[in-house]
Image (cartoon, rainbow, N blue to C red):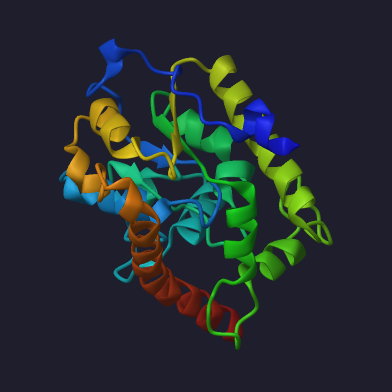
Length: 254
């Protein structure tokens, strides 16, 4: 079973206590879509960190555009991908759900920000697959799972993703690639976060020097935990639905 493989388990040993509260910016989420990016964004915003999520306001344009589009356009111009996309200390969603710069342009991100702190999120694979399959809730849109199947993402060619196992293997490969990349470029710090861990708020507080309450229900009553998780997911879905509609609107205008 993939539940017992190391690539599905967040490792807290990547950072030492001496690094707590001293991690270098920018903080960049390299996690997959529908794996807690909204919670990360709200955590950093609560901690007074200038954070972007899905949309970036960068140099040379007035209106927000997707961070993915901004990053790709900057690289095509030969400009630094992050500095071109706004004065942020945290980038919590740089993909648009089907195009993932955290996979395709990690090298360029490293070259610009060799000391950046990377964040990698984890959740139970079955839950992730179910979330991708049922997002967005408005059935007039293609599900994120279907979009990703058609997108021809590096390591995940078109047609892959027919079941949980195929998504699980892709996720595992991404985790291994990120871990290997950081091992080869130790100027980065990798913070791995299990968003379903009941102690995640305390862990994030220690690592980033931000109060644990910014994560939300960090010390929730175990009896209420499932209900609280549902409430938090509904809140994230309300935010993400706006993002999904903007993506579809943009696609329809192509």
